[in-house]
Length: 246
Image (tube, rainbow, N blue to C red):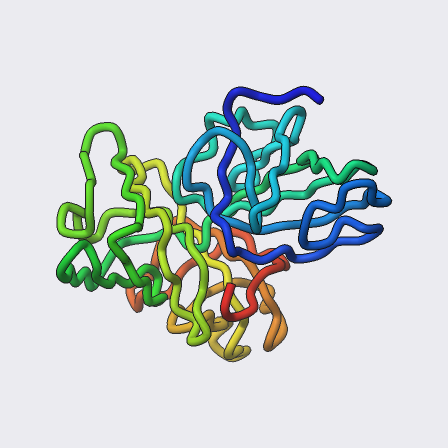
């Protein structure tokens, strides 16, 4: 087995999304092998662990924010990743693909910094919860170490997990370079206004020529907000993973 010296460590206790052919929740020595998909949080570098099961990363195809064929250096602490893996007859799992997509990217507003690194902010109408464990990353010119040092109204990329109320519990917040970042938003279409040519994701109104259907999970990308605060979408694509609680 080809093992890399650097990989990703996915937080223990997170969910294995699917498996088949004997590749269930744990290592089964002498099993029948199989495949599976697991989701977790990048908390360090060394090897991939999901629910206490090690997954070797040699040769895995890595996609970060829709950009394929990325090096492992493109993965960062606090990113939520989905890992596709195979399991051999000895119960050894090897990653075939690792994929990261951010939950939201847009201006950081309504920043409220609390005690011990906790706090809240709003990004494109979406409530974001920050904890002492949230990883902050600057843009190279501006250092950001916690919520108190995050510049207001700057574009940030947020990775995390949604709780049962739909709030994003941020595991990583990265400040984007001025003038280079687009707006990105993923969610379930909660309202459609055909007369105005808009739809709504959470509290964010989106303007687009072709409206998606109510209840559809979509990913929206754009570069500007209109005078009323509506996001002018450039693309609206079907997306997976909009269910509450992760």
